[in-house]
Length: 235
Image (cartoon, rainbow, N blue to C red; front, side):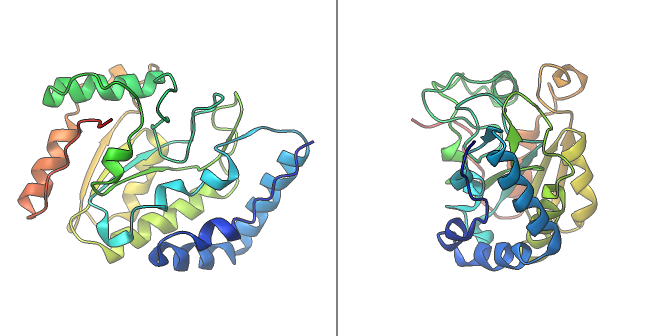
């Protein structure tokens, strides 16, 4: 059995103040209390949960709310060992690039001519205002979608609501059905919403390839007097 706490209080304290307020408020809601108790119970029963507890909210660590220019929303974290580290689609340097991320890099090349990067860590995107968020923030080892409908969808609804209301001219890139459900939370008269199938090998050929979301995002940012994102992956 594993003794892992999912109260997240120490994690929240290290986040930018804008996120601390939102997360603290949500942690006081019944749905989040139920969720954290369920995560702790599953871990105690021997389940391996990704990402590690201290990385669940990593997407918010270094990106204050007002710095967000683009939100890339996926489904749930990678469920292989050593892959998920709290940023949607990203893996840390030295970890083999998963198929979904390989497909993202392929579309990036086809769209903007960017060569295949040497690793799959997307920190350089975060540094430029790209929030890499999943619809569901945890998953069990080897079981894709295993933490859906535990409450994370309600939490990420509130995150999208907050970005929608407090920011201007954000590009929301929604990949896959669960992510696309968040479109209802976005005022598309004030923001840009781009939707496509998930980049996984199961769905990438249904419209992800050729979506040109990277260039479209930059065109929108430029048209709203914001600096375009350099989508090259930096060492």
